[in-house]
Length: 286
Image (cartoon, rainbow, N blue to C red; front, side, top):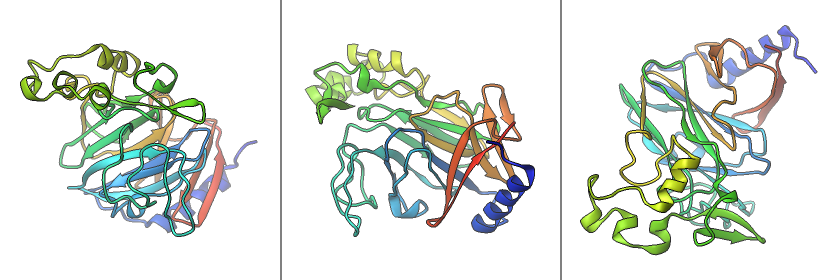
């Protein structure tokens, strides 16, 4: 199934109408997308620019948000949630209390995207608090290093048994060694509370081997934190870091693949929810 050029133009006009024709140059556009096979409930703190800090994404769906320079926070995914009509209920992993809208940090273990927006942005994906979902942070249309941060591998499949969190007969998350054993060595505290004494451990090395561009322990800075200037971000769950991603910037749909930025999305399905009521599914030929 292909999409004719006139439908693409219609989509762009609809998108422009909904999110507004003008985006401040001091703002960052975030596209949060679910490539998992199950519904997830992304959480964001602070969440004032992200639908109050929590929302649901079905497989293949995305939501678009705009955050200003100066915003600094965390994004993670929750799984196995059961919210009632009032947005109250538990989650199997990543819970931030019993509310759809997060106002506090998530319960470990959870894969975390951490971002600080400034003249030069800093961002990373951290497994220091454990792992519950593969995730990546891809900068688009920025200047500088602008590398992709994230964890492609599903550590639930290779989690050491002593770190595994079980649910419904399967591993649903992988705890950190600090969370399990609570020692200074694993938690980088006390005599181990500095970069020279806090070194990689057996468990953090397993995390790093599986996810080389994610934080595996507290002082894993050199290969884990990235910078970019004036960029938009795609935060994707259960996606390969090489998978094409797209952002809508200055009236243009800008996408990337393994060769860099492209003006179209390539041939794959993409569902984007704009606001809370409008959705459109696209299949575009590059």
